[in-house]
Image (cartoon, rainbow, N blue to C red; front, side, top):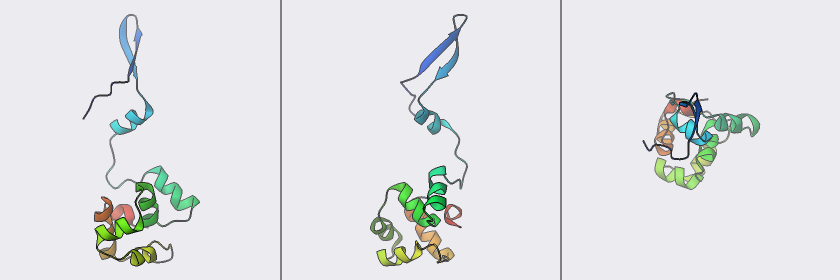
Length: 109
């Protein structure tokens, strides 16, 4: 892991007491819980009424065509899967999870 270069030290009594780093750096250093879902993805589900598949794809900045190709399905099939009223089979979730670099649990509603 690269050490951050844009840090600030705060001293007390001539000794380092605190370190201030940019928020983005702080986030990178936090432990990631396996199968966690970022706030931004949850927000898309709630505010935009997206299912988890579409919310994750949007969050990752990928197109339907890109994910569909990686998952070995058609773009039209992915479009149908992204409709909130359609429950997905485990086999479909597995393909999509691999295509997006996620776990199946992160895609389950």
